[in-house]
Image (tube, rainbow, N blue to C red; front, side, top):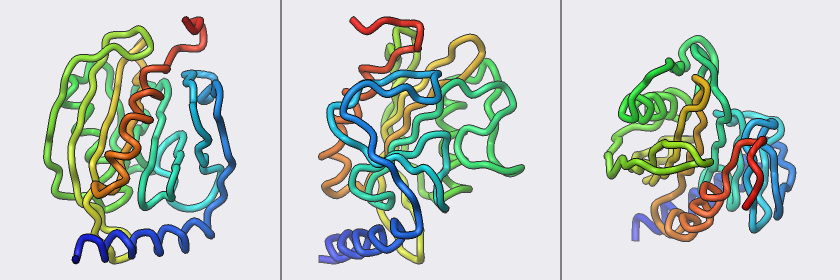
Length: 199
């Protein structure tokens, strides 16, 4: 089956590219993301500490960066990039609507990892870290190392004191997204600002 061959190829490429990057294990337990957003992890994740391919403030993976990626972007200020870096990276503006922020995320993915063919699934209000925010999902295609993969993304975002907080997960649509989705939902549900006590 072509899709299974693509997935097996993705695994092989992920393993080879991971050798060029450096990761450190984090969790299980409580973890402070740059002292701006705290989460509770029920398992270990691999946090990228250096190397090519990091597209956000915190990049974590469970099965390899081409198979799944959890990006946590805490407290982005006005005029700062959210996904990606450099002059071309799209930047956050205070007062953006939920649709604007999702479009900003997609533009960042398009420029940083050659993502394309975005298909919206949902945008809905949600409470994150005790704040009013929103939850969103979309699908997209990603071309990396001349390989096309179908991806599914799940995100949560909210604003606090004119700063954007974003939790974004994306993974290969076959197997990895449905496997990891409930785990990511638990991470998002545990999110809290550092001054909040865990209940």
